[in-house]
Amino acid sequence: MPQGQKNKFFKKHSLKVGDRITDAAGLTLRETLFPLFLVTILYFLWGFAYGLLDTLNKHFQNTLGITRTRSSGLQAAYFGAYPLASLGYANWVLRNYGYRATFILGLTLYGIGALIMWPAGLKRSFGGFCGATFIIGSGLGTLETAANPYMAVTGPPRYAELRINLAQAIQAVGTVVGPVLGSYVFFKETGDSVNSLKTVQWVYLAIAIFVFSLAVVFYFAAIPEVTDADMAQQAEITHVGEQEGERSFWAQYRVFHAAFAQFCYVGAQVAIAGYFINYVTETRGDTSSALGAKFLAIAQGCFAVGRFSGSILMRFVKPRIVFLVYLSAVIAFSSASITQRGNVGLAMLNMTLFFESVCFPTIVALGIRGIGRHTKRGAGLIVGGVVGGACVPPILARVADARNSTAFAMIIPVIFFVIAWTYAVMVNFVPSYRDPADKVGESDLGLTMRADDGGSVEKDGSLNKEQGSTSEKETV
View 1: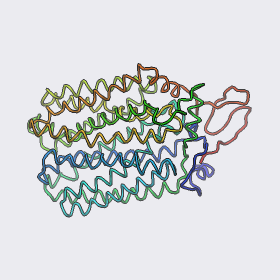
View 2: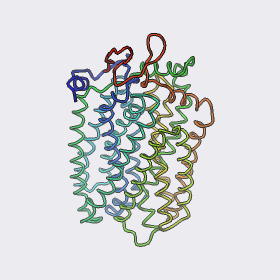
View 3: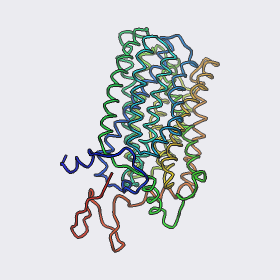
View 4: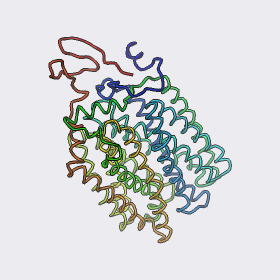
């Protein structure tokens, strides 16, 4: 990396950015590579944590002798922390200090929660694991409050959905690594015995060391900051003659619908993943929990493939259309899993996870489009919808315990998927939803820049090629 480029991202700076125009929302693809690479690492971290959570859910049932309903306390602790972060302290830090400060806070909380896993393992305390998981969820909720909008707004808006889906594809890789680690490392030699918890302790200690180190990197990395003023400017440029972003936050009904859709979608997704192992051990003969964890890893692999392929597809097809088609397929395949058994039922859930892939990040990207200065607040609200992951799994677990059938209980996520589907329909067919998303997505911001004569010239990195002049764009 040239010395000038290095100084651009590693220099003395304040954690508090303020609300000034930095032009970071109009950075080119080349200018965003380094900061987005750093942020993408965060996606892997919470994918890994989520993958571990799904595996530990089933093994805690066996190791600690708890019911399916009680084991859902892990999901409740993890996702219950999200709204406290995204609507509370994390969103306050994001709006008053900026993205980098929020990343550092999230990593610190994640590391503290990982360290608490050690005494929880020593005491074999399910309550302790839930407490540590709550703090980890607080950290990851903080990271997600900042990372998702950062991916969506940093760089050309035309590629917002592509960027966030690619980053979420890395997160999906983490969800594959988690179950694989659980199957081959946590429980390979010790099975479902309490001795397996010792390995859990060491893994979380390593996680804590890594995330604390990453927090230090973010402290010294002067990543570009996108402010409310930047987003207000973007809304004004892309919504010619329209001042939709100037309306009050409470009048942004599209954001509230997106947040509710996120609540329903995430709740259904988490419910399926959290009880995936229960499903296959009950419906497929001679399937142990360890083998079920391997099947979960395969399903999460389908999820990851879906994210990568969906990201590529969005390069050629409007993201809102891909979103509608994928979520419709999710409803179809998850519905089939209710009545099917054995390998057919397993295949239905694999297909469900494949088509789930693009839904979460696309709801975030579409939901915050065109809301201008409300972008950070709106993103916090939509990410807060992740609390659905704490609400829906206990409902599924309760139905599964009552009917002694996890397969029958899959009707619960199907209902919530259908409710989330209403947003996909609206953003495709209702002009007040569709037009703001399309206008921002079709703009040339970050791809071209205005010339003095009112025309536009191509941008290459931060260089203005007009008349051979080279003026480096100022970033934070």
